[in-house]
Image (cartoon, rainbow, N blue to C red; front, side, top):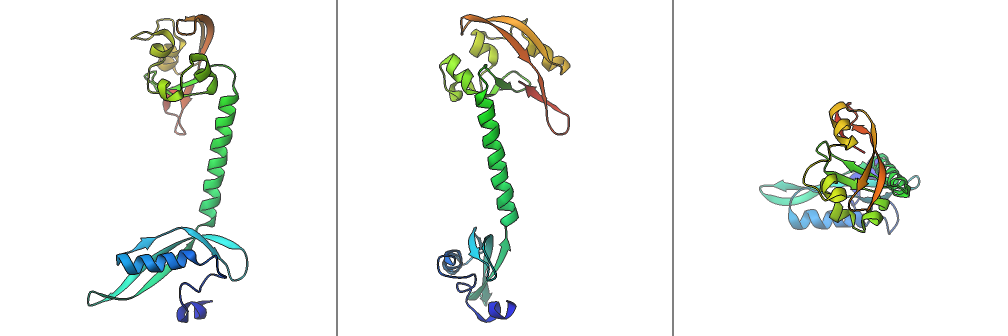
Length: 193
């Protein structure tokens, strides 16, 4: 309650032992560094479960001497839940991308590879770190310039899908190569897959 908060210690607010470490840490840091600090942690609500919080602690000074400090706790539970959902969606997308058994690359508008799936790494016997940032024609064809028959060139030019059969030098086989445009949320062309 407000009355409990005014007269009590910031370390005592927020429930039982085990949930006040963030308050103790904030207090110690604001005393020692003599400036505003912001942390994240978990606190216990007096009326229920623990919640994610972000405390801001600031020193109170009189005549350049620290005489106290104040703290503000922000409930960041919704932000933490959103972050967790974003992580879950990212992990699900990566699992799906890597489950595709065919070679899949994502390239920028200049045909520079920015992402590959596991099948690409396995087919090329290279790590994604060794593949990414290279041009597709360097990696797959050992060339210094794009292949004239590459459907990616047309996709970059027209922003429409394309398909063609190509013999891949580095793989030693002929593959059906399909490309499609990628657009951002504003409709801007940002690459090909």
